[in-house]
Every structure is written in structure tokens, then in C-alpha cells.
Amino acid sequence: MPHAGIDSALERAYKDRDHLTDAERRRIIAMYTSSGPHRDRTKSAAMYSEMARIGVTPAPSLVNEGEMYRTWRAYAAAESLNRAALRYDSVNAVALLNIVQLQLDRGHADSATATVA
Image (cartoon, rainbow, N blue to C red; front, side, top):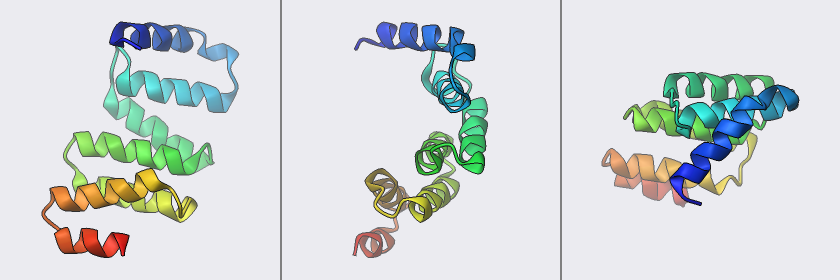
């Protein structure tokens, strides 16, 4: 879907968020503020953190919050959040691959190798 179509869909979902369940509403707010046309990554990270804290899809929420930290180049914090996601879901491939990539980005090839071993 073209970027304009995604923005339009996020705008509509955000506008109608009050008609959703609490969990769905939180997901829409987090998505809207992380990649929507009115991006506010600080607000998005806070929403993902809140979702994880209250148990709304904790592993994906932590991975997504980690992604916000990665964009700020806070690699250690991003890795920590992905490790926390693995504690919720030990087979979360996205979290595992994110950890490896973050380790490689910081020049820690030995740590990356040990992570996948």
C-alpha cells in the first residue's frame, strides 16, 4: 500500500479509536504516533511501554518500544527491551534478530554469535 494510503488508514483508525476496545485503541494510538502523519515517537514509546506494563501484547509492545529507542540510537536500551520481549515470548524471532542486529551495529560480533548459538 502506498504511503498516502497507509497514512489515510491510520488517520481513519485514529479518528474512530473511541469505538474500539481498550487494547485496540492503545495499539492504534501507538501505531499512529510511531508512523502516522502526526509522528510523535516519544508518545509512541510511552504507549508501547504502558501496553507492556498492563499486559496488552507485552512481547510485541516491547519490541516496538525497542524500535523507537533504536531510532534514537539508544542501542543498549533497545537491546534491553528486546531481551525483555524474549522473557515473555522465548520464540519471538523479531526480538531475537533485533538483538543480534543491535549487537552487530555496536561492533559486538562475538556477542551476536553467542546470542544465536
